[in-house]
Image (cartoon, rainbow, N blue to C red; front, side):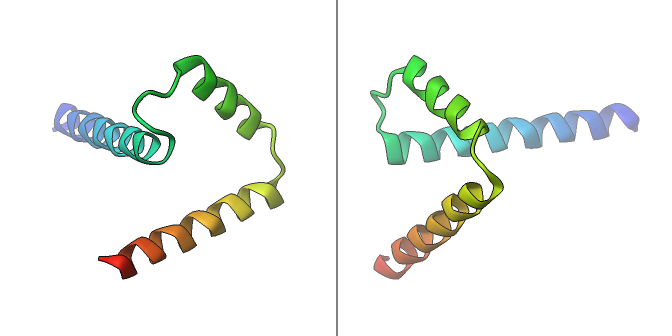
Length: 70
């Protein structure tokens, strides 16, 4: 039973990674350079909480606009 939980958790993590990868490809393009992406993520890691909140807010608004277009 414990192994089943671990597998489910691993499966959920894998699904989340695939979804996040799809979002990266959607907004940054499929031909994005991996080194540039890693550099961008490292820069993001050093941002303030206020900046991260702004990124999140912008993302929410963008997703809402996309839903309205559909």
